[in-house]
Length: 118
Figure (cartoon, rainbow, N blue to C red):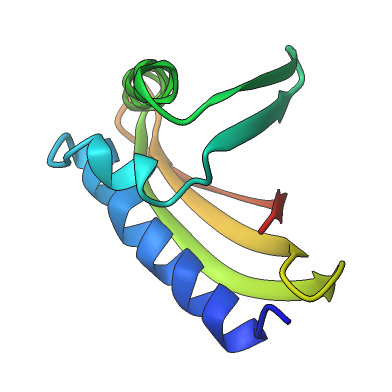
C-alpha cells in the first residue's frame, strides 16, 4: 500500500523540482523521472493523455513558461492527504500555496488543492 509518509516525501521532492523550474534552474528530465510511463492531465481546458517522453517534456516546458509569465514565484506543499485505491495506488489530495507577483509587483498568495493519482 502507498504509505502516506512516502507520498508526502514525494510531493516535497516535487515541490523542489517545481520551484527550480519556476526559477528557470532545472533539468526537464527531472520531471519525467517523477511520472509513470503514461500521464493524464485534467484542466479546465480538457483532458489529455500521453506518454512520458518528449511530449511530456514539451508540455512541461510550455507550462512553466506560462507560469512564469503570470508571475508565479513559488509553490509550497502545505498538506498531503492520501486515499488508498489498491495495494499500489492512491489518490493524493495536495494543498498548495502559490506565491505570485502581480504586474504592479505586489505579491499575492493563492491557496488551492490538486488531486493526483499516485
